[in-house]
Image 1 (spheres, rainbow, N blue to C red):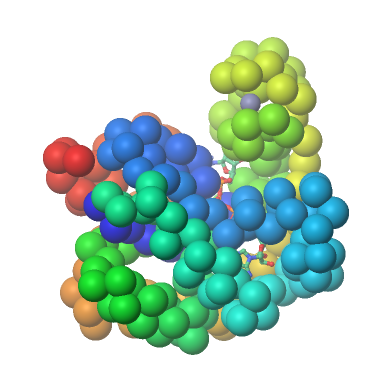
Image 2 (image 1 turned 180 degrees about the vertical axis):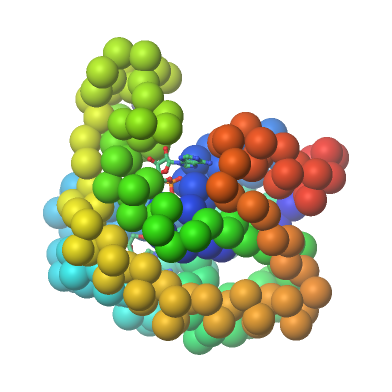
Length: 216
Ligand code: AP5
Ligand code: ZN
């Protein structure tokens, strides 16, 4: 299964990605996670990306596309992949089409998670992430069993630097201007599935599975 997860910041892409990769047994490629890992490790890429991320802006296309291209050429992507947070501009989408066509393959489905703008800020600002395994929680909607500890691995939970209210608003604005045009881009190709993201996490996942079919 070769998939893209599309949706505004805080729509639940990361939350659903954890479930999808388990069910369909495909690698999760999140450009946001790749950048955060590089920031943590203090790499040159991390330093460059942080300048943009802290302001809620997109990292320049040329940095992102090269990373995704290398990752897609790894062996574990032979049977499929889930791209989360990429592409984010029409330019990135066109670059992805070229990369996949050079590899004699193509996308199968784009899952577009829809959530109203007002809900997104509350979701992002209340989000807490596990420092060790990256699982996302929410102080109201998806609480861990023990406060500030990950249910899955026991790691400490933290708040992302770009989840402050003013940065989230900027990210939403950037999404509307630069990423939302991808909905038309993939609708025109006939591969988009729109999913109502304003339901319980398990219900959203059920709808995604229905849209994808239950086979691997
Ligand atoms: P990235 O890491 O991709 O962040 P994002 O797209 O802004 O998405 P989020 O991670 O904020 O949200 P999500 O949809 O995954 O929501 P989640 O599941 O956590 O990008 C960060 C930055 O990196 C960008 O701003 C940019 O600078 C850079 N970048 C990354 N990729 C790039 C690219 N391709 N090009 C250029 N720059 C790039 O859920 C949110 C919260 O809601 C959680 O607390 C969760 O528990 C809760 N929740 C989830 N589902 C539900 C539900 N159904 N009901 C109630 N609560 C829910
Ligand atoms: Zn964890």
